[in-house]
Image (cartoon, rainbow, N blue to C red):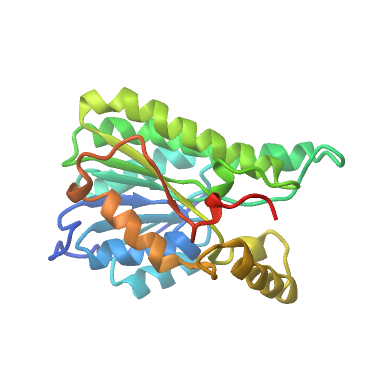
Length: 266
């Protein structure tokens, strides 16, 4: 059973997210860690989730506050507990960032049914379940917003990444359908679609240091701006989309990919 580590939440301060109460999933590394750090800096009170209590504690200390919740979002009971605990710790919920996700390699020439199910479970079904549990609380929030983390692979196909591409395409359609459903209730729903960003994502999928370095070097050619992105750049966009400054934006899938989606296969 999951356990919970806690730390005092930050006090609301100056910033575009001042006073906002946010739940950020996958907060132990990469984009989630950067988003939590940016949200706290922008004045939000943050609850963040991950599967490793020790790393969550490190992130809470690094970002300057937060409420840490150990959870596996493929487990429905963990989702119910994570939402309830976040609401109790923060006094409500204004923002949900569905960041937790994985990448994997599969296709049809060498089918990997278990890998396909894993990718869909983590990247789509877990997001859908957590969102459904959070929405009743967001309806009572202040300027409520949901942000889903998709990928350039949500609208561009890549051979050998079938499950990942399909799961992210599903997230983008989920973003649009629930944006329409929740707009009359005042809840905005958007997605960010990063290109290659320097995080632990690909290493966690099995790339060693040499292979990952080669992958990043190739990204200089596959991204028109000539480099991979940084997690802090995506976090800055996330902060804007979850702020009241973006109050007339919903159902959008915002590319932050160095121009990657503009290119043809090469």
